[in-house]
Image (cartoon, rainbow, N blue to C red; front, side, top):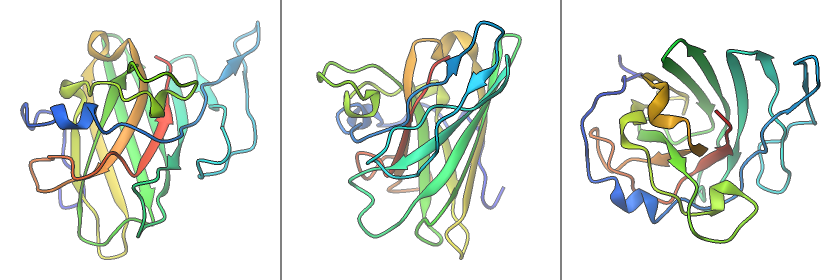
Length: 182
């Protein structure tokens, strides 16, 4: 639990997060008729869109892209999303983060800011999907949690923020983000 905290931290002052979701993210996967996924080259930078590699019908993996608020860090990582019945399990692994710092992540609905990139749409955070974790001395952090599938079915992106505190209050508009498709 040193580096990982589960969902259920409670409803916090995350409404400010919905006003801060910005930056570039990866594109969702392209599926063939037989259900196989096609994948583009991945690069954890906002300068290149990334298609999602899909492992199977119940699991998807998304590459997190660095956001403009990541000025003193170089976040690199991915989000693994597994659907099991009515539950979605999310596991986020990041490197290049500030050491011994709290981070908060959650899914967002599409915002109203016109953009082809969901991460730049300024959408509202889906509070039940919140995860908080503390990075280790090497700047690595793992965020894990589960949420009801119905809560995030309309999510269009997943955003990781630096947190002001262990409760997960966002301190920035996001340091790493990816478009998602549920």
